[in-house]
Amino acid sequence: LSGGNINNNNTTGVGNIGSSTVAFNTVFAKATSAQYADLAEKYLADQEYEIGTVLAVGGDAEVTACKIGDRAIGAVSENPAFKMNDGLENGTFVALKGRVPVKVIGTVRKGQRLVAANDGCAVAGVPHANDVFAVAIESSDDVGVKMVEALIL
Image (cartoon, rainbow, N blue to C red; front, side, top):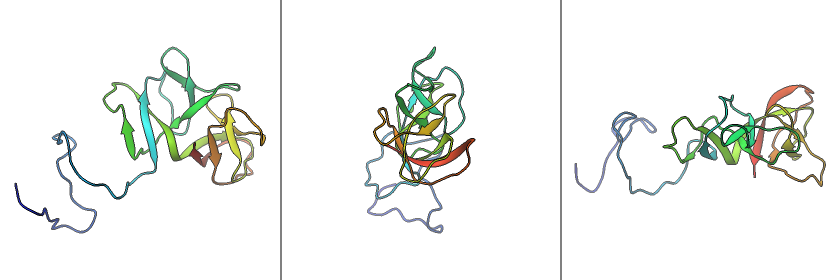
């Protein structure tokens, strides 16, 4: 196929170049948007973690569920817009930047800084907290573990 234009005869947003089983190697194009919201990189985790679990460097592999006092690096990504280190076999995509759901324990207010807590959760930190890795972009009065939309810094 050669020519000046490739036209999509389907409706907007319907149609692919290549497929999940037969992909192109390099595409030279200009992207103007991304369907999803975070930049993620694959790391080897010491076990399989659910989306939103907060991870830190450590454990029997490269990353593990965080605990109090850890420097969290991000949270398990659901739908990364950008996938770095995609070829790493058995890796887990960790959101390093952007908007993602994060497991949070305790009440949280929009704008509060998040730090590592136990069991792969985050908790709202005090204003001068060290090791802030994210900012809550929604509030919750639920004192238990729940998913909160957050901005990974």
